[in-house]
Length: 343
Image 1 (tube, rainbow, N blue to C red):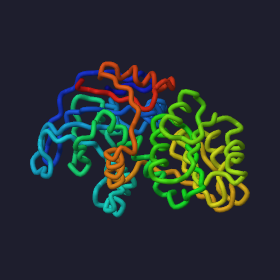
Image 2 (tube, rainbow, N blue to C red):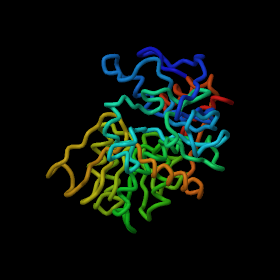
Image 3 (cartoon, rainbow, N blue to C red):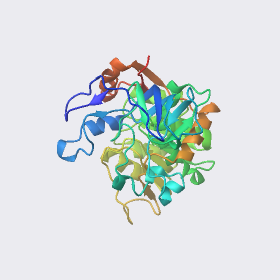
């Protein structure tokens, strides 16, 4: 499925099957996730569009090794693997720590994630440039696991840095309980003793939040910050994770944050939170992380293997992929949409 023209709907087209060159791995795609950031990309105007067209979509991918290029070791045909999306150069200081999501040379070298500049996973086959971008799935179901490569990894990376503040008696707020948010709730329940408060504008999303473990599920409106402070005896939350990132939600996140709290803006809807004396409670830390490290993806998959996190999914065939994006744009997806390009 490709985004082929600025402002047009994505289309399912036929392209030649890729062949692996030296060092490359060819995957037969088992499952590919659909993400709201794809919609954001397709809404960019022509003057700001950063990628070449046509763009094969899909930055969440899992598949079976179909062929190995010359020199590839450590994999065999038939292995089931997940794709680590935010690929870097592998040589800079950040990449040396496995933090390829923060590669300092990717832009300079023209390295892009699959589906976000490079050919993506919503296709029958996906070519991977280096085997280090593949993580074994073993007996994990690729259909329910593939969203964890972003919708699991991104909230895990965001939450992990705040765990020291999420002690017994603390409160964590999740704003936006869709694809990433409903996974964040499970991660918070698995990794911390904090009370988890979910906020969303849609009642069906709040019901999902309750299903996956939120202690409280509240409407995300102009009174949301006030309600969180009421729940916390006026203190506010020790960590607020905003998976929407629009100005109203970011402003509310700052208003409900306690002294020394973390406010983490994950959503990409353009909101910003001023930092300074009087703008927030004292010593509030505001961050805007991006994806996660390769090591953290391995940790997320181990949590899935242990049964601590599970993604609610809707599945679609390749020909139905445009409809999946329509439903996502309309806010009708429960959890995460997953495309099965090979049936």
